[in-house]
Image 1 (cartoon, rainbow, N blue to C red):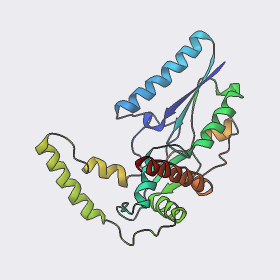
Image 2: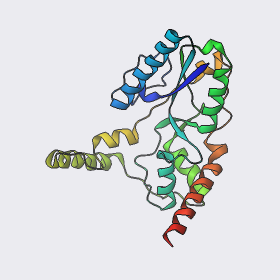
Image 3: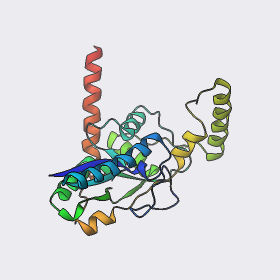
Length: 228
């Protein structure tokens, strides 16, 4: 028996100044991230205690048909002309297509060298927000908006949100924490699983965006029919 636990890169960090790999000492800052790192430890301990093989796969943002996460929300916002880029969009993010996750898991269960180990799985491509915007807009048949919110203005608005949050005793929709996530970079290396297991990601945003957009359109069609 080989148990594969799907963990998250949030067990490592929420932001980074460079590309992180498995040697980076985990520093989770959220309850979600802390729960993931503890779960990784429990999985490995139970495997050793009860004699079965275990591996944890740390995943960044997962996207693909049927996934209703951040990329789906971004697609919807671009489709409805509601997405406005903050800054120049040069910040980078690692992501992983669902098909790469499946392939990585299948490669893992066929290799006993993965026992008790942790691997990061990504597309092997770090996408800028600008790349995401342009690629999604093109597939939707939309033109990106010809303007963006300058960082200086965004910081002023975030400061207003901070003040409002302190007044109303709860976080507002836009504040410094939200801005930090929107303009920050968070990238990871999947070189270890490629070198040790031989897994090579076949999919990326550019050769799968049509599938994801098609899924989005099907969902929209079902939703609109249900309203009629």
